Image (tube, rainbow, N blue to C red; front, side, top):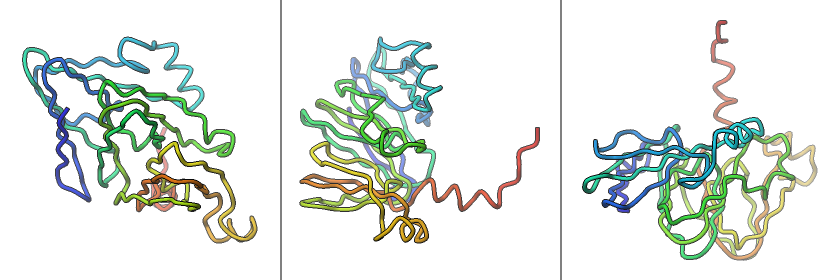
Length: 227
């Protein structure tokens, strides 16, 4: 799988070239365009696994993520991917390791990468949050996207990141959810609320914009939907 990132960093798109026999797994709705010989299969998990009932259960739980699998027939092919929000993209080569990715930042990966769509690491801490996390494991290329710029933060000891700005992080890092300020009152009055404290050694990839905050900024000016 050959990935070329176009128009970085503000409005990045990814051009993915696949040889015959290769398969690329991508988030549902990420495809911009593709060659005419591309075969597309949709599942709720890895190719040839998962079903409609499983998908409905994930939707009820607020943790749904359908996957499309692209495979060229009769020769090589290519597919273009784009994100819902303007920003950058990055590639990461998994080498028999795990990468935890915020669901909205997952774009695509090689078929050799194992995808756990229901990673529960944050669930008990972020009750009420609609953030959905993906655990990517194994070996192969991964394509991620961000809202705004994307940049790595190297952690060697302790580092605090707002949960809405997290794109991905190495599973070698321990984490806990805590208040941003000295007290809960200071945290919420300061607009930060809950943050994630990472400990250990590894990398956290952050995005410059917070999708949740962006939505709240827009909401007062949006017209109500008519029935």
